[in-house]
Amino acid sequence: MSKDKDYLTSMKRKASVIETDLKTLSTLDNNGNYSVGEKLQRISRAFRDIQRVNGEILSIASDPMRTIPGLKLARDRLAPLGVAATTALKNMQQTMLAEGINEDNLPLLNKINDMLYNLARLSASIRAYLSFRDADQEANVRTFVKDLIENAKRLLDGEELELDQEDALTQVQESLSRYEKNFGALVAVHGSDHWRQDSYQVRTRLAPLENRIRTDIDALVSDIRARTEASTAALDDSLDKQGAFTLILIGSGMLVGLLLMGIIIRLVQKRLNRLLKTVPILPCFHQTEGIDGHCCELS
Image 1 (cartoon, rainbow, N blue to C red):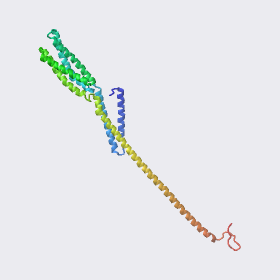
Image 2: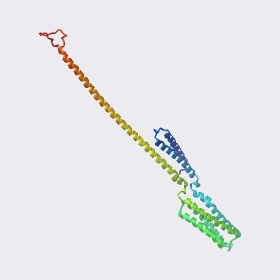
Image 3: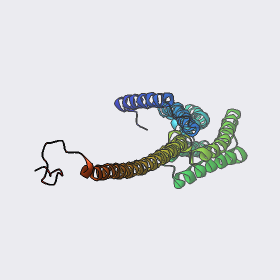
Image 4: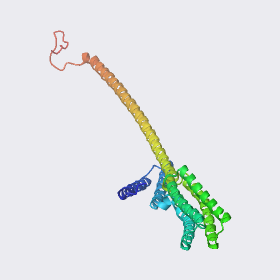
């Protein structure tokens, strides 16, 4: 995970915008649609969970000992035991050197020096295993520890030792036995898929939340789209019905108009016919008569 300050600031700003948008959407009228409101609430809850988990992951990523638990195990449960074994052997070595080297103690001193050398190689193998999580380095660590324990046991069983030398080698044996056990615990963590906690938390906690919110958003969009299409279809149907009704009204109006015109025409014709029938018997209003005394046609 990025620790860049500008990136983190940008991420917080975008998160704030999203949170504001979700609050705004939640306050909008959803036309009594319970499904839409429920999905918005789920999205808001998931987003809050993402913010909380993301904060925890950033906190883990800021501490190497929390990011890689194997480092903490090595520091707390292996290093002290390695130092204890090394210190015991060095004290034994320094005492022998102070007393003087001779043919009697030289073989023992050489064995102590070899053990100190192997302890240094053990420490290097631990660092290599922590860095690369390599199976060969793991095998090297186990081999060094096993050989050191066996060498200490052989010295205790086969050498004529002074009391302080026995105490020193006993401490080496006990420390390395505990070291061997604790290394198994370290491998169980450092050799697993959660050896790096920031990545593990992203995979197991953050990714499922992101998938959940993505699914809810897709469902919300589908719901809104379906309702919009249904509303559009209903509006189109309503407009079609209104159009048909309008056409019917227009047609009916035209028919009624034609009927009225026909009636009016027939009435006019009837009145004209009646008028024409009465014209011959009307008296002459003008003083113009024919020879036979009948009215003359007006010219």
